Image 1 (cartoon, rainbow, N blue to C red):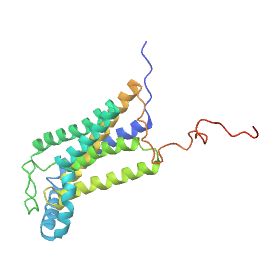
Image 2: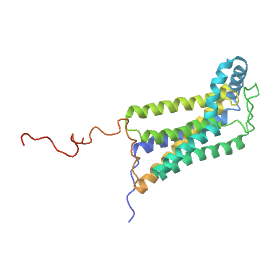
Image 3: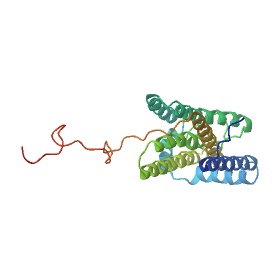
Image 4: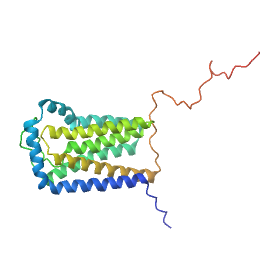
Length: 249
């Protein structure tokens, strides 16, 4: 007799919906950038080349480095070291899949689409790879998103988790926009990268949820709070191991 099917949780439904919507957005951009959206891309690239203030190009450079292989490798090594220390093997596999899988998907898709990069003029040397989709934008959604998931799960307070997600959102947007400001990607390249990264992140999260349920793995233990202890923990009595003071001899 087969075991009863595991009920689908609300979080899994939300992840599945995100996966479907992100893939649909990517597909729409993939079939549109050579049509009506192509003209918008060209006009935007020409405006960036001729009108974007030079200081904004320098502001964009650090965010572009963060989303490149140097920044992602540094973040990835640090995250992997912490997860190895915790022996959080499932989380380590999840992060590796989000990081490496998204970059592999980008490499394959770039070769398939073969879109040329903007030729209106760039503040940096144009990479030799194709333009669509943006690998930096994909990493900003998939790799930084995976790091945010792992960190937020280990924070005890809700406001800390909100802060992590807010910072990740800002960084992910900044990484993608930096590629437009440097004129190495069209707008649709970046939008497609964000869509692809979110889709891949949702797929990795769904796979992790299924593996957790199959193995009976609980969520990661929260990191110690800034106070170093929980207020609910019993406090030792003053004066070592003695109990409450008694009256009299």
